[in-house]
Image 1: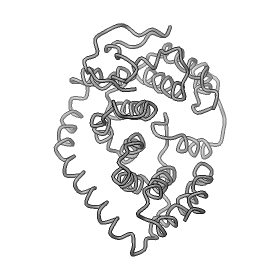
Image 2: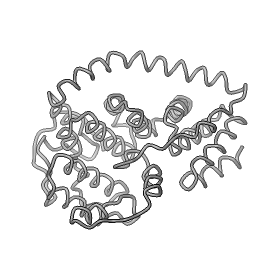
Image 3: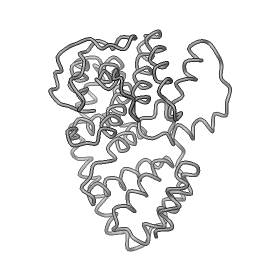
Image 4: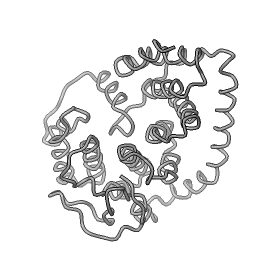
Length: 304
């Protein structure tokens, strides 16, 4: 079992399908170990097996008592065409107790879900958090700035978007984003490359990866299940049924919201955007020079 877990970790970025095969093999041997279910969930996510990833990571959260992969769960919901559920996960999270990196990633995914619903101005407002303009460079700084630049571009604020792509590129020493390439595109430079390789890199980038392309699932990799997993799978199905029942009312509300996509979304975004590091800005956008207009945080909550 341990060898399969090691192989999963080694292959998950380069060959996610093979990594998933190893993770499933580990699950057949030790389905009641939380770390195994976590490995299956993450491998399924990287392989584009969204529904399997949701089931496995929910099981991991239940077994471990942790909430460390909420951003991945929310990103899976987006990939399945259910942005409302991604927003619900964000709103339902106890952001005071989340690790800062998890909270920021969850914020980025939730802002992307707002964009999926056509609430593009709300997405911009959500991302106006203190970490955006902080002078300190932390692992999520480049991704947060990139997401903000992308949101600005989506609402037609091209010059501000260019400035924030530039600021993202300045701190992206690990190449987590394609901020430098986006800058060139905005300047009219055409970049040629292998589309398939780019898509694979976007999937491997992690939850909320801007512009991420859902992978085509490898259906034959998810069918190997033995009898000892049946009890766990039944529990997962029950959990999914409960989640779907709980989501029915929310989906009805979201359908009404879709018919009036801009109504009340700025207020929602102001409520959603609080993070641990301080008070969020108001509904106005962050300036290109790095300042954020002062304002009251309607949420009163703190998130990253």
